[in-house]
Image 1 (tube, rainbow, N blue to C red):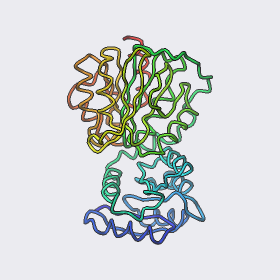
Image 2: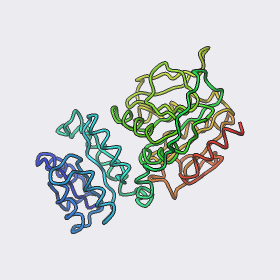
Image 3: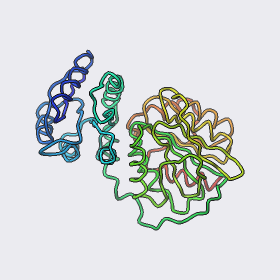
Image 4: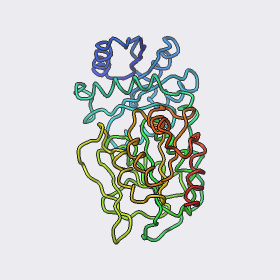
Length: 347
């Protein structure tokens, strides 16, 4: 039985979330909290297995409460977030502080809970199985990035490319990797992070502030530049195509692949033509998105790096690749950036 504490200042929200969990025999609602101070007190008293935590609450907001909880009584936390610019920025900060995942309030409200009930249950299940030690170890990474000035590169594309795929735990893992890439990285980086629309822009902006390389949300039709990182926008597949202009990003809203849009497999399949000039990376995440694409990359002698189990928040996507025996390196998250740079130098 998974014991859940629900923290939200809205009585309506508390009720619909409580009803949702009570309808699932694997969950037990051990309590509800109405503000951040109340949440901390009940976490310490009730010792739940998982906490759903609203960001905007009175007395003490969700971010401040989360910081105290992860310091005093750490447990898996799933944030409840609104789809606004401020809400997206705060969600990224919550993930930095150690929250495992987040649930987006559809249209600013979760009243249509029937449309996302499966997502809520699935994410809460995954959170209880997450590597909490890894999530906390990857928290508070704001000092990882160098203060070196970003270098400007021409629009011409390199014949090399780095492709990264990740999901649950990915925002923190990407901080470990992207912030350690050098300002003179000789090629571009394309990233698929499973995330809904609105949040990928906040993630890209946050990483850009911390990194030597330039990080941005990808735009349709733009050329890939060296020392630039392009994150697929939520709800869009991102592909890379070669043409006379160089390596071009294309975005589309074709049907989801394995319930994912953006899909890691879609990105990885599109970069297969880079062959041995490709370094592909699979990081923490639930499920196996990216595995099929990695098999295709292996056939053309692309270089494959997978995060290891010890540092993965959820060892699903990397495990699927590692179990096939196709990874060239299996590494802890803090060694992956260096491995990428070395691999790019060799090819």
